Image (tube, rainbow, N blue to C red; front, side, top):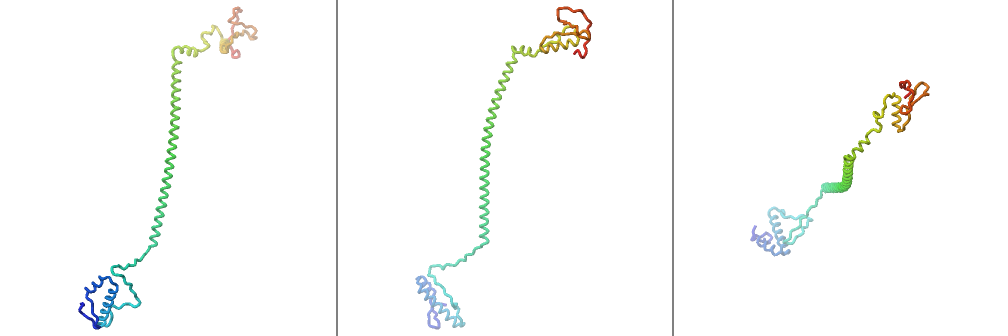
Length: 231
């Protein structure tokens, strides 16, 4: 179809260049006129050929015209997946709970570290005190050793040896010709530190006795051997 053709009703058709020139004028009235004329031409041609309208408009429909140069906004359907959103929120809550647990664990570990530091400081102080006591005891031991060495020197040795000697020498103080009872009595007297006369019993009645250490001689008598009751 060209711009030179005309319909049976006597209406002229617009050329494509005419339509483009009209559209470039950005006039809504002219655009509407072009659309209406184009629609009438197409309707008349379809009636002549087939008897039906090709561009039949649906009843009860209205189309809002948009000015030239502006795009008609396309409606966007907003669909929300509630299950996905709820799962995402649940995961976020879980992560926040894990973060809170980690923070609490970090605080607990920090407190333990501080307590260990304080305990280590206390132990260091105790170690210092014990080391000072050890040094003092070492000094005392050294002083004691030096004192012992000074005691064991040559001028003191005779005094120590004399102190260890026995007070009573049995071999030197034992007279000859003594029986066992006299020896035991003399030993008892020496241990007591008291000089007692030694009485030797001659006879069963015990009336006669003499001291062997006295100057007055006594008549000799027969000596008897010691018995258990004499001891």
